[in-house]
Image (cartoon, rainbow, N blue to C red; front, top):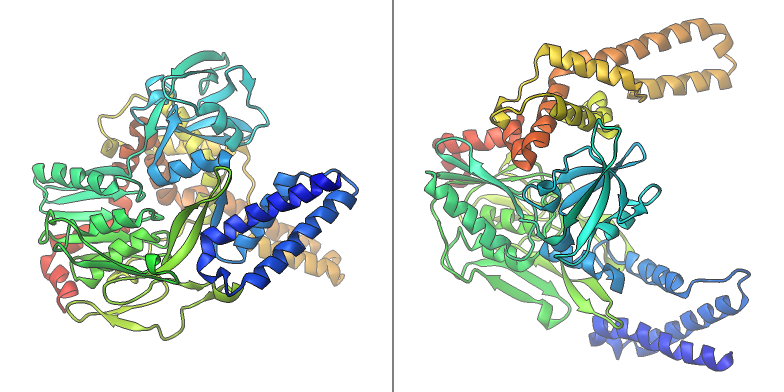
Length: 548
């Protein structure tokens, strides 16, 4: 037993050392004693737990917990990937995987098709949003989480998978055999003309080949008469730094500085310049951002702003000014580690949270550091990219958020899709008063239960009254008031009809026309997009913003 433990201690030390050597060899010599001492302590602690703990332990699980705890003390972007997770990591960086091409989710304990990607195997096999999956290759999915189900659906291209499906609204299961393909999701989720002049590109992620996809979409829109462009980076969490550089390079001159990364090691401290001739340095350009636009999205929007190349519209971005690099470890594992901070051409870093010394503090203060664009406009460092034209989308009311959370908007759209004839285009989807009333009846039949802020405060008041022995004296009045609040909540379906109807029409458009339908149907209700269109149509306003 001792020889086995001694051998295990040696292997564990080597594996742990490999992690540190791969990440921080530049400081290993200076910290040699501290590193060696703590690795020895860790190994001794594990050995003692393994020998003495009352129940059997799982070595892999314990070591994984230790690694994750170590990384958690750094920042949220430094992560460890085991051998089994490499495929998921590959999908994050390339947008490719082998499977049927569908998003699966859990609704009321059922495994349901949420989004069968248009043109991919699930869609071609006839699966629609709302269809339930009962079995995958004979394995019942009941009780399995989404990760487990995803693993059953994924596989090598050209292999087949048999699903036992219960179509939405049907009571009879049917078996469908689908041949898997290599699923490559385009980062350009939509491109099209908003009107005769303004083109629109919705861009979801910076995976491999993103710049080329943007270029093709741009070329296609030019053939359709595009004279002005909106690039939508809302909810784009970022990705490849190289792709961000290439995308900026489409709109600014060759050899323009895009980003300056600064890290502890020389290899991570570099200046990135545009490498090719731009496709258009003159077309009026609007970039849409929001609080979920992060990392590479902030590089692109920040550069467009710094060079006064276009107008940034929307909400202040996420504030991730950190760069990660992927490092291979032993036994086919990998880690993604933060290696540098990035700075836009004006010299600003948009990072909002300071993770140094294990402390997570916001860097934003009442007075943010200021920088200048190429034409002398003032921009701010820290806390993300502040738009040139701030536009905040209205937040949803509680009734709308509850309908989405309880999947009632989705389920009604699935029912509508099976009953109603398909419209000619997404823009033709407009619910009549009678159809909306049918939705109200659908919701009432589901007996949804949710608490408004008023109800939460009122219930707290009741609890306080009971604690102070007041409740018995005022209980009749309190119960009457509680009933009144409950009735008002039911009337919210009518009071907030427009907002709920907009959500319904957007979801119904998705069920008929997929992502394209959702985008096109929501244009008229998208206040940020409409501001972008109006800014481009009023060129005097546009010029005033970028040339003060």
